[in-house]
Image (tube, rainbow over the protein chains, first blue to last red):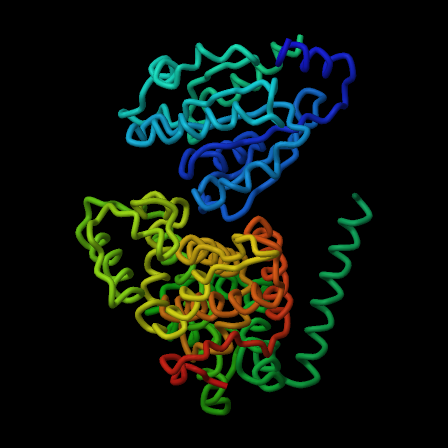
Length: 178
Length: 311
């Protein structure tokens, strides 16, 4: 079920487009991740007003990635982008411990959204290049991820800056396709 | 492919022959002809730049990247190489020098701006902190900041309680630009900020129609930076800077872009903030189009720049 079945469906009909929604607090690294996925330069990133969108070709899939700004005042607009989402990617700044509670609340609210019910969620524990970053296991525990029962989920440590973990996830996405 | 290569060399050969014939007929080299026939400003400097870069002489090719102190010597070399008698053509040396100062100055400005952009905001650095606090004081002179880490920063359009994370890829350049705008063009900056804080309503429901001042300042810094690095700003700088364009020119351009963007945003009347990137892209294209006109100067409206306009 969940991610497995969706991706199985994808496999049976190649060329299918996958709509990926990238969410998370401001400064989590969503735009950097988006650019990293699209193999673009990541040295000129500015805070996102509104949203960015990129289409990435990956192993026969067309991934349409929507990166929505994480600023508090933009968060009410997230819901406008829920429709037809195939995968939700939620990005967390693993070094920003002070806002773990805030990010947990936002994630919990997303998981309660009707339009996102059953949508597989991939959580990126980003910024692992920083010494102060919390490991993915600690974040998973802090956010009570193990209580998620209604969908497929996965947490993945990564550094959008160095690209580490980002491509691995593409591979594991891919692995789940099969 | 082969045909294209042949065509390229054929055209190049034809161009050289044409230049040779014109030179023999008029008794003037290309540089002289440009200076005599084109009025000073971007039109002339850009032609001179293209001529120098396309020259077959190494000395002329490298002249566009000499150190500013070596420009006089370079001009003498060019005159000698082209066998131009400075006593008969006294104005030519002056004109060429002005052009070369602009060309070399632009290259150096790109390097200076790039260096600032690469320097990340560091909250351990007292100078950086001082500038950040200055930004607050200029924009909000009547409401003191209660703490360095404070939700108040959102009032001037940063995303959270500590602006340091918002500078990101634009580094100190974003802060320098914002402080310049707030300090030198205070009236307009405060006006743009206060417009961006007015609540907007549609069918009695509040909508986020306003952009956030500070982070849009960082975003417009990116736009100005791209215009500079791509060379699009040459038109503007060669028209307004009498000699080498400086960081001040760049910052004045930023102020102009902030003000223009603000007016553009109001004209476009977007549904809400989510249209930001669409409007920004449209604005970018409009500025690029304006800069294609060699007579174009993005004249900042405020007094500080009046002495710099050299038209």
